[in-house]
Length: 200
Image 1: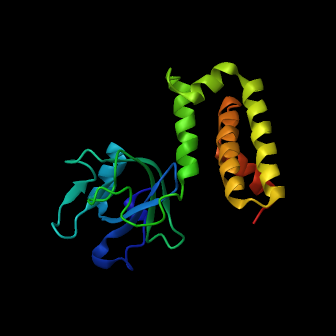
Image 2: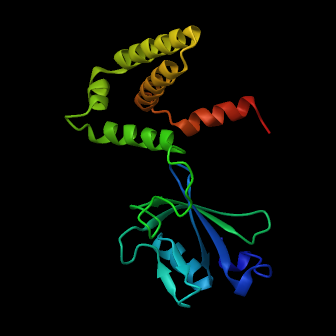
Image 3: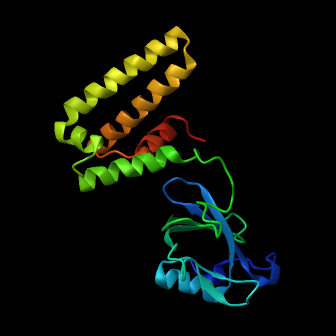
């Protein structure tokens, strides 16, 4: 992908709108603009760089704050006049100190954040972590916990206790994520399997 691949005729001042999305949580973080120089620098450094419309200069996100956006993937839209960048943020993205410039509900995408945390626990195995203790006990214990939590969630569902069901379902989801990690399976793997069953 090069900057010349984009159709800039519909873009104001020849600047390409860029939507940045968290590659883990899928939360939309911000909107910025690139010219060819900003695009090329983004490709070269792997850090999202924009063209500042107010200052008329390049700025790499986080160059002073340290809250960079490391590129994971980039996608052009169907009209090739907008760019989607999936990135890993190092700290808050917004100048207000918030995760994103858009005030979407904070719980959105948290399951994916938790899944990523479980993977880090598995890689680092910190001594004071319940997740570490599960991994040490192995797949049989983790699978047993998934079964127990599933039964508890089912009981609360049958009893019609919504609040208790949400509580137990959260326990179930967490232990299920630990089991996925133990088996070397990601949420994306599960989504791809579901997509096979329900193609567009």
